[in-house]
Length: 258
Image (cartoon, rainbow, N blue to C red):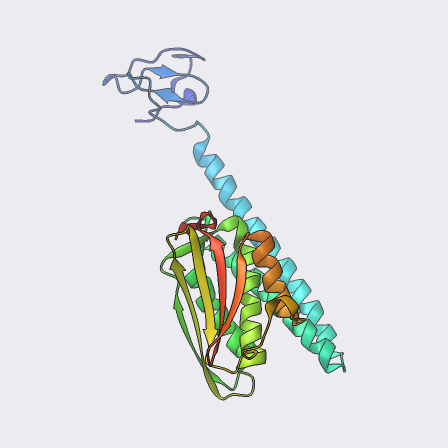
């Protein structure tokens, strides 16, 4: 049973006592009801109103973020359509893909039952379909995602989205480019040393066995390396055994169960 101050008139003022028939509730002040054991037996008087306002604010923020990203995306589309330089056009297209990834990240959080945790697997699956249509519309690319229920902390969601974004760019533009079919795999492995390893691989040509992350000038590699080290306090590794494999090592403290 929940009783609010407005319901009892002058029966109990601030700090007053209310004796109910079943003794469920005995103490009342401006905000809370307490039971006989002194435990909280009710909700704040304006709890429903607060929930309603928070829900409205959440929707409003989501709308504004989505609207602003759409405007930026539209402006960049205009720039691309009027650009004759293929190199600059490619840079703009990659920037657009990052904006799309950020939008997917916000959408993922907004639709989540727990906004404190970013659902990695759901995000990667949605993003992968968008990327294949964007970069390889005429190719058949299979995607295998196995992140074992891991969820990244929501505060790091946009940074994580950009990491996955640029790994897709590396794969589709530099490893699987020109192929009619291909395979991309993304999996996560928890280790006993307090880290989570996320492995991004494909069956393309990659950057070759002699590729060195430290000396690479590839923009996407520099972006991923910077984000992993700066925002996740992690490490980026590259392995090549016939096919490329990117390994991101991140402290387990950056993750929650989704």
